[in-house]
Length: 450
Image (cartoon, rainbow, N blue to C red):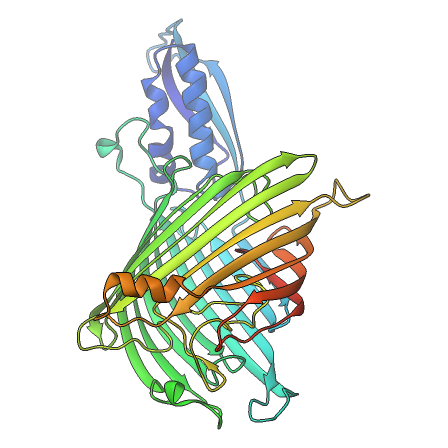
């Protein structure tokens, strides 16, 4: 059986040039099995464009055509689609023990009929101000942070003449963004950081080989609004910097649920090179992984690990806003946010190398086995240190791994549609002299956890 023609019904705004590369492989079918298989794959590719609400396929008798000739072995493939609404808006609020954030997202899909997405995101965070110069921590005012991004995204599809059958990637997209942020770091670094930048990204995805993102980012940054008690480490990095960097991110996620998985594995790596202009020059690498296994009867065992290293170019030093930080309810629990590693007075000044690992056992709860809530028993630890490029690698490894900060505890983990909430009772087991402990109950909310 061969395919006589492909018809698309229900398209109003989408251009033919966008859909045609995704359905053209159907024409290569040689028998009924090929027709059904290729049609199903074409529907899947069209759905991944994100501009159609429903996609269906039917087979029809071949159209006789201009000369009234009918081939008994030919069939017409009819794809029935319903375009999704082009305008979308959402508002919401997120709450944690570190801030309260209100946000709004607006999106216009299929702007020019080519699968483009124009999206604007804005958020405003209110954090309880902390009087760092008082003998005991007291909440006396409100500190704020804000974020804004304007993003244009467009699928990158091959022209039909250059297309190879079965090699069309509907997830390949080019993105261009302009953003502005103002982050309040006063809870652990006695300053605020303002960033304004432009970025360009190329993304591609494959459910078996993983996703890749190649990006170029240029950003003007300013460390400002220093507290009176700010340390010298913060003060020497105050002011303006210009960062120009390229980066590559690879991720492969085979977990059945990214929020509270029951089985599967996850790996992510990121490499960054800063110094293509500007006054910030370094190389940075970071990796993380997770392995999840179901033990049966609602018990789930999870092991996670992550680590990173950043090295400045010769003649340059690392700044406080380019170093790693560690500690808090989403990483090594039982410690203050960014409470592990080097400190200057009460400021977490970050490190050049770190590692962290965790073991978690999620247990079913009586009468709640069918609910997205689990008991949680954990053991996690890690270390963060500043390293000297002149130090031998063996000595650097000893510095980073010799004195880990470790904690254990138990609590509850609750899965929501877009995030996970944890309430744990934490007990620090080992710590360094500079660590800031947070024993007792700790509340966390987010997407990624150790």
